[in-house]
Length: 533
Image (cartoon, rainbow, N blue to C red; front, side):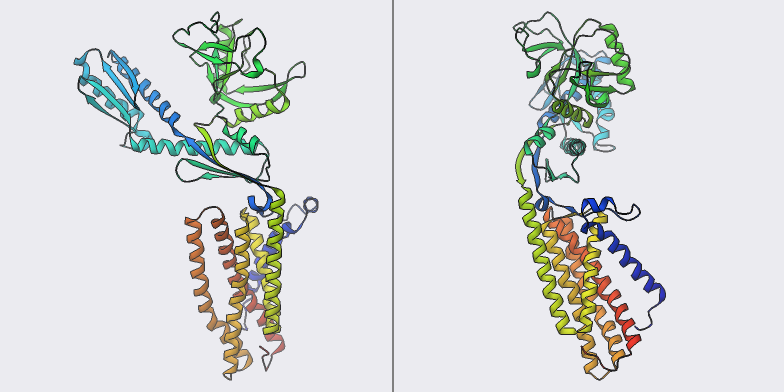
């Protein structure tokens, strides 16, 4: 024990120093951190929703529309494949199934071969090699019925949720907030927590908009009461575009010139009269297509449609060749910025519905922080006083390594970017007790060996060696419990598990390695003949 290798001394000292330096930013103000040297760590522990306030939303993904779009897509794919083989048919969607009714029943076998090929080409990629996401059957009368498989629906549902999470993340990041928590919750639900944000209505407005954008040509000379001709559809005008004498709806071609998928950028800009507008820019393919359409349709209106509402219907005065343009309307700076954010982030693949909403005010968060600090400080002070009174000089060593242990925990949390919550603070308080427990086991073992008649240095050596296996067993079992909590728990339980696991690792390091190194230095220097323990 007394012969500590030089490499161990260097390693323990270096790890402790690095850990403490990583923890320092947590005790500095933002102004002090600005003057902090650039080569030193700057990360702070992120406070959770319950500590700094914010908005909690639980949103449900509406997969009904996704299923409908999937059926329409499959219907179009199979119908085009059949018609390419000159198979005449009528198709329809009824009760979540696609019905293909052949005009010439003698073409049934040929049609089934075409559908088999279609399933292999358009279905297999979703659910894995050799597994299709659609299946078919033949009803009496030769009607072919196609439906989506359960595996295909599950895979598509997971894809939609993953895409929705990514879009939500881009939208929230675009608002300038930090460290949002966005994750899948159960089946078909998404949990959104934004610490430090206090406007749930704005958050719901930004997140909940589907933001499906399309550019479609306007069909002229059709009044609000006229029948919509085939191949066209009617959309309402946005409130900002309605004025006396103008129609409340507009008829456009069903064919979409471009969609939001072709956008690469969008944001707030200003026109020549310094009015807020939304500027946009297409990718190369979108820019070429937009140029071709505007070249062929000069002096014709085209509608810019967002989530089924016409937000602008400008007249094409000349070809737009640069692949960019602006959306005009009665925008304010805020609404133009918001629309630009939505277009940049992309469209949600499905509609979201808020099923749970909770707002934590910053005052309550501050109260939680103060309560946590008070509890931690009182507990720490009580433990330190008890340890000093019980073990004297050895207690002072324990108190020192206990302080280092806490700094290491905060340093690791800062580096990992972990979020600290009230349960996390509880985990830290628990690790304080566990760290002390390891030292108590060691000191009691040293006391026992010394009372058996061993010399002071031999008692120190034997105490650390014999207590080591007990400490390992106790900490490993607790660490396993923390891993299980992290794996199967959620939210606050995970926060507790993270801090508990980190605390176990740091307490093992400080109690077994650092404490032993310091006491070894003291023993070599003092060469005590008696132990006051």
